[in-house]
Amino acid sequence: MDHIQAMRTFVRIIELGNFSRAAEKLNLPRATVSHTIKRLEARLGVRLLLRTTRQVQVTAEGEIYYQRCLRLLAEIDENGYAVLTSEIAPFRAHSCRYATLTGA
Image 1 (tube, rainbow, N blue to C red):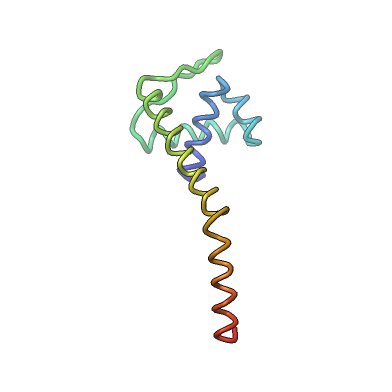
Image 2: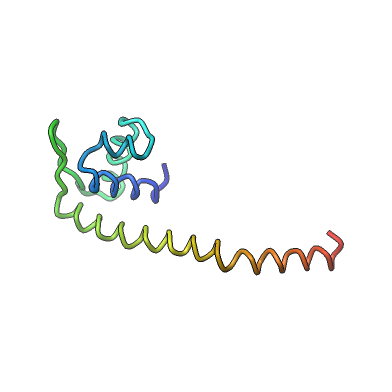
């Protein structure tokens, strides 16, 4: 799972309060969600969540990372939407013109 998807998984766990609900909403096995968070924590070198059999608590580092994830994911989503709505159409028109001129 890539880093952006790991960030989305982490955010979903925080928003829903546990791994099982996050896995359900993400349409992933719970083990995949758990493994993703373990790898994310290892990559970052910090503990993001404190897990018990009954609850998940966010660490201080996890809260900071959560806030950053929200901003980054919003920007990624916004940029993706901007590309789809404004930049692709002119590119396609230009590509068609280029293909016509070159005979491609």
